Image 1 (tube, one colour):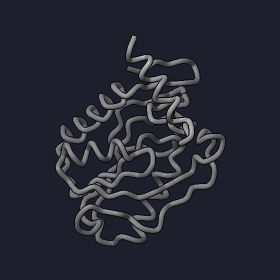
Image 2 (cartoon, one colour; image 1 turned 60 degrees about the horizontal axis):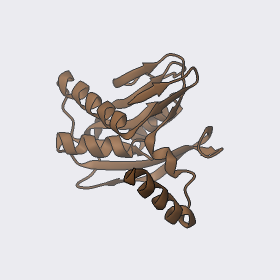
Image 3 (tube, rainbow, N blue to C red; image 1 turned 45 degrees about the vertical axis):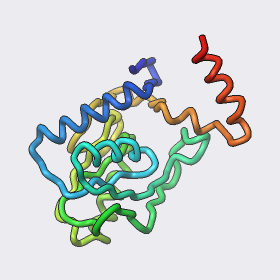
Image 4 (tube, one colour; image 1 turned 30 degrees about the horizontal axis):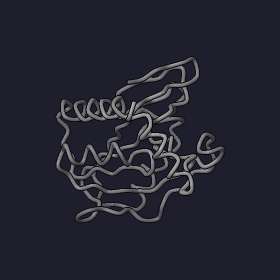
Length: 181
């Protein structure tokens, strides 16, 4: 389920999983085959995990980070991890690069350059995202939803950004009380 205001898009877990399934269908219907799913952590982790399971392909993870300011709501300098972790083999062949969204396009462009410079055995990279904001400078190969007004997307896992370990007991009690009703 999604709800939208002028400046915000709110997505729950069910809606989030439907978006991933729609993305998988787009990739499948394109007829393009690939060798590995490379997800960008953190935003692309859930989608990458689901896609590697659906397509039965190895999962690779590359950590990137630019949203560290203001509890993850302000973009700063882009950091790209030095290593790619992969479940089997080496990163090579045709790569499906997965992230949750293209906001400005900076990350997608930088990661494609990084792969070209550091992984000569990668033959082709195609990108797959759930959302592309209207202000983005890069076009993904696969995208479920174009958001012309570039809203802030509130994803279901973001509730954990403000949760700290010492708060867990109260958090779980609150959830149990809701479930009991």
